[in-house]
View 1 (tube, rainbow, N blue to C red):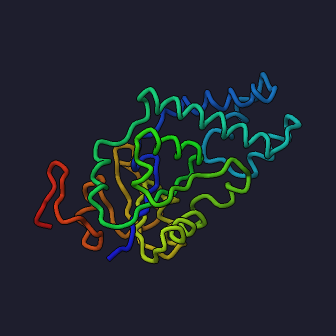
View 2 (cartoon, rainbow, N blue to C red; view 1 turned 90 degrees about the vertical axis):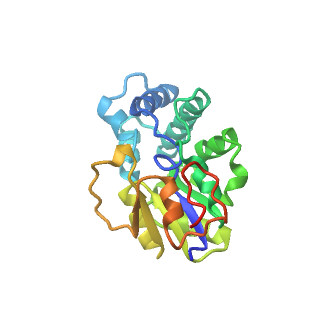
Length: 233
């Protein structure tokens, strides 16, 4: 049996925000740093999938400290996402409550900001549902540790005191990070991944969180209490 289940966050537990929100937040970050008219290509480099080289190159173009640029970018992006959570633009998926039937410790490992993850769990009153929850700290160091590196998954495993978790994600980096940590993975093929071709092979593929309860090695409570659940499993 798996001794725990660890989840990615965005696109797995909660919906994705519109990319325009993150673009706007990045423009706001430049403005906060006193750069009123940044090159749009530089803004684009700082929106998603940011690498350390991107930060150094963009910071150098405006004589900014790379750590300061990235910290402000992360703080502004986190604040924008928190607002989206508060006003209902970013919400838990309809099947979120299915995971309450998992009879094992649970955790979160996300490449989103720690402040965003903390805010979501507090807003959903779900903090106690997870034994540990990792996002990225707002520092350049986190860019070297985020998935596909296994760093945060391994920290979550240590926190939970587990050895054989299942990691549930919606991206290639999730599957690669799980493999690097030496654990099984489940790729969740939600609508935004309907036509995605994976570059790595997950252990399982599921359509939603209800499907986790049908994986033989996932410990499930005796009576399933979600609509459509099979109490005979």
